[in-house]
Amino acid sequence: MIIVTGGAGFIGSNIAARLAADGRDVVVVDSFGDSSLGKWRNLRDVDVADIVSPENLFAFLEKAWRDIDGIVHMGAISSTTETDVDLVVETNFRLSRDLWDWCVAWQRPLIYASSAATYGDGALGFVDSNDREDLRALKPLNAYGWSKKAFDLYAARRAAEGAAPPRWSGLKFFNVYGPNEGHKGAQKSVVAHMYPIAARGEAVRLFKSHHPDYADGGQLRDFICVRDCVDVVSWLLDEDIQGGVLNVGTGKARTFADLAGALFAALGAKPAITYVDTPIEIRDKYQYFTQADTTRLRALGYERQFTTIEAGVADYVRSDLARVE
Image 1: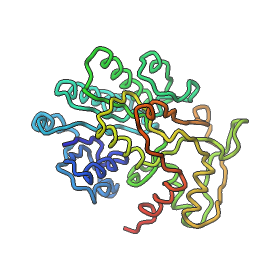
Image 2: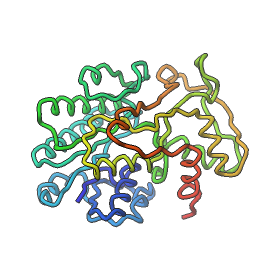
Image 3: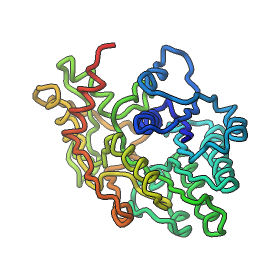
Image 4: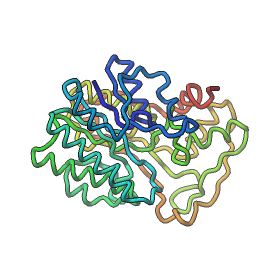
C-alpha cells in the first residue's frame, strides 16, 4: 500500500493513477472542496483502495501501518502568491516534518515534493544538493519557496544525524504541465491558460521582456510534462533509490514562444502571440531562466528520456484539454 497525500491534486492524482494501474493499493489523502471545482474528476478513472481526509491522516497511519509500503507526499499549498504564511508553514513544513518522523519511526520510504521555487531568482544556479550549506544559501522569492527550502534543510539535517527514513527523496519539480490541473485556477500552467484562447483562434498573451539579454517571448523555463514527473517517482519506488534532494526537470530550457508554438501546432494553427508588459509588482522578481541540472538524477541511474514540449503539449491537448465532458 502506498499513501499519496495531495492525491487528488495535479501531480498527486497522476501519481495515484500510475501506481494503481501498476497494481499497487493506493490510498489518496486529500480534500476536495465544492464539486464545481472539479477536483474529484482527477480520480474518476483511478481504482483507489481508500480516500482519507487530511485531518484523519495520522489516525489512518496508526491503524494501517503494517500494510503501508511507503508515503508519496505531494500535499501542499502550492500557490506562490499565498499571503497566510502561518497556513503555509502548517501545511508545507509541519505536516511534512510529522510525516518524516513517522517514516523514521516505522522505517518506511518517503518521497516528498520540494520545488524549483527554492532556487529563487536562479543567481546561484539550479544544481541540486543535500549539503546544508548549499541549501541554506538559496534565497526563495516567496513564502511557498521558503517553506520548501525550510523542509529540505530539516530533511538534510535529520539525515545527517542518522534519523532518516530508509529511503527518501525530496523532488524539486520545475515547470510542470499536463492533465488534471484544471482545478488549480490561477496556478495552472501557461499551457492550460493559453489553450482556450488559442482554441478560439485568438492570439495568446505572453509577457514582454524587460531584460536586455532576452527577446519578447524569449524568457526560458524548464517545462516538464507531468507524466515524466510520475516516471521519476515510480522509478524511485521500484528501484530502491536513495535520492535525497533531487531536481526533476528536463535539463533543457525552452522559451515561452516555443511553448506557445507547440500549442498552436497541436491545434493545427499558425502561432498568434501578443506581448504585454510584465506587471510592475512582479517585475523585480521575474525569472528569465530556469533549467534543472539533472546530473545527480542521471548519476543515480535514471535513463529515460524526457518528453519534448512539442510531444507533451500535443498529448495534453488531445488527452485532456480538448476532451468534451
